[in-house]
Image (cartoon, rainbow, N blue to C red; front, side):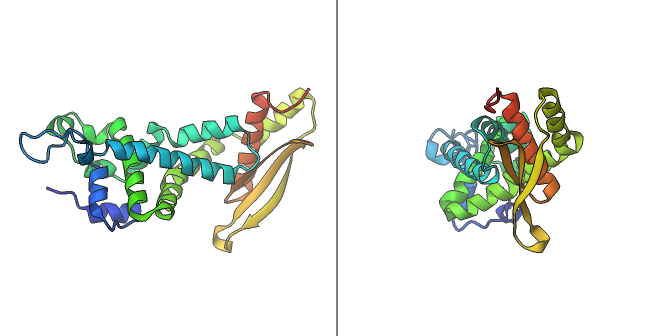
Length: 240
């Protein structure tokens, strides 16, 4: 029996013009279309979609991070991006969307719990990203990645910030190194009153600063402090 694709479309907030793309994105290579037939033809399952979706996700997360952290160095950006595109993170998002309920699997995968496997769920997320792009081009898939992949990361960052105070860590590190204490400046704010975004710069001395965005000054300040901490720990701050 076919999954109720319209329920998934509602969950991902995107309605396909060509629903066969959605179906293929969630078809595992183990799925047999009829008794006794094995799926070997690449055009019948989602492996090629996974390959394409991985590239699209890499581009969109890089684009988002460059916009969010305009002065962050490559090491920091790479670490955040690697987390965003990791199978672990994608699997978490897939489970939030109940994506496993819609996978088309062979009997072997079904019996061995394929609907909950990290690899299958992560791959399905990449394939879904490719399917949205092929059906609606870049803007719909950008919205999907922003709203689900990156938004889930924001929740994780918020939880980490509650347990770890990057501003305090930066202050302590500056004290240990005998340099000036960090200062924070709100460089800009944009968006409607109910959904503003703030841009904050964390600075220790001339030429040693990082900028980040957040939905509050506190969040943006923590992100900027985290980026500056990472830069200092990497030894790439240009300090003597």
